[in-house]
Length: 168
Image (cartoon, rainbow, N blue to C red; front, side, top):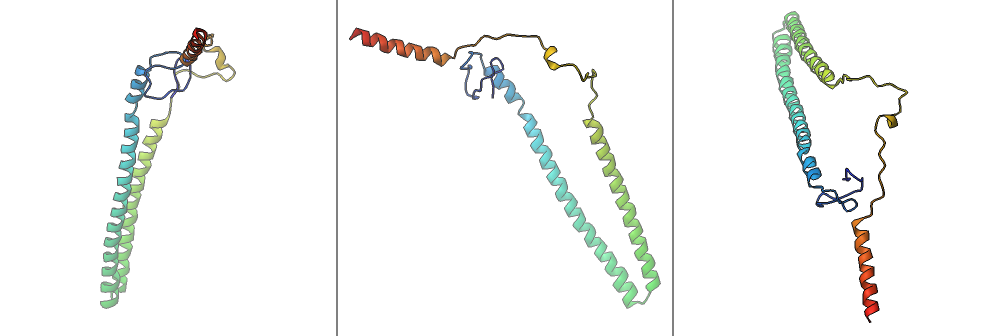
């Protein structure tokens, strides 16, 4: 992560920025508060996975029912009883009802996609002009170079060695 004051990189276990001394506890708390977004994303992935398994199970069930219907119509009615014309009519009825059910499911899915598309649309509050540079939108702030906390402690180490050498 980066310090919001000076932009130097820091780890989450630090309490203060090593470059500018800014207190980072509130920054890390704020970032921790944003973690439920990741949790929501994982819940959404789990929901999608369960829906996919549900669709697969429903497909297997539908294929089983369709297989039993076809067996009953083709084998029992058409082959063993010899009613070919009645069997073809019943087979056509099953295909027609299947297409009707499929169209209802597809239209429902299309409406879900349309609702999701409407949620993603962003309505800009103010129109953005193309020719305006972003540099003019922010106030100009000049920051002086800030010395690191470690630089001062390093200078103290050299001073201690120098004082120790002078005492000898």
